[in-house]
Image (cartoon, rainbow, N blue to C red; front, side, top):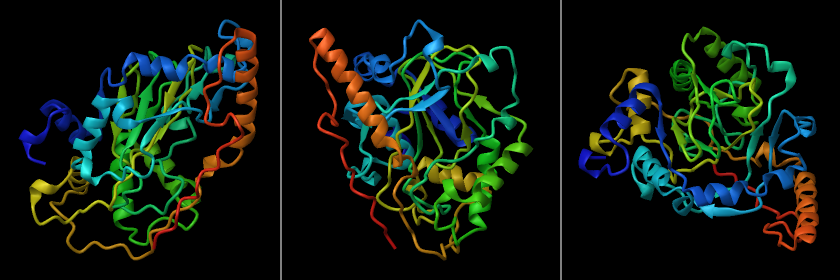
Length: 334
């Protein structure tokens, strides 16, 4: 994209992304949308916000009951996303085009209140995308996106990222044109082992703290990990993907057509383009791993919402009011 075409990302933000592989979009989610997706979270959980003894699980991935198109939910973040990937016309708006209240909660535990942990030892380092075969140029995961629904202070469960390991992942996938295994990257033991080894060698980590409404946009291959919530301040985020219509193009005839994601990839590899690089395997998609086991949680949350509505005279706002919605399986594309 030409410089004059950028309206959401400043020069400083663009340079930060090219150097570090991530950028913060402050106050990107309007307060009313934050409220809409968090106002009934404690009812859905069945936890008492004032009684930590009821916080049975340290971390919970909640199902989605309501959704809003990304463009309406976080307009500033949407504009920045479009500029990072090279324009709105490159985004597939038929897939993952909404933000939902599928909150990822981190309540911490008493075990970690007075204990420290090195980020290398967190044990769940990964890059996103459990539903497709990963290649260096894969477009299924256009960006790694993190929405903050409450203020996240240091040592309060913020996500860690490792920009140094991003470079190692990019180099690894460049030398692996066959892609990850047919069980998808998040389920491929060789991927997990490689990412953990890359993180072990790193010397710099970023703890993503911030204010409610901030959105973090990172390179799609950015290794990241949940952290320990030592302070037991409830932390709520979501991590919705966006998908591109086509794979990244790392050999464009016009340099102005490269997206910032593509430029970051090429920069990390130390090249201006990759004219001879081609994948040697099929592009495959799989049913998401996280879908398994969600139906039971959906029914539990709906039951709590119904009981609360009866008690307060309110209504239940959920797409699952008549039972879990069956999502169409993601198609396999060769």
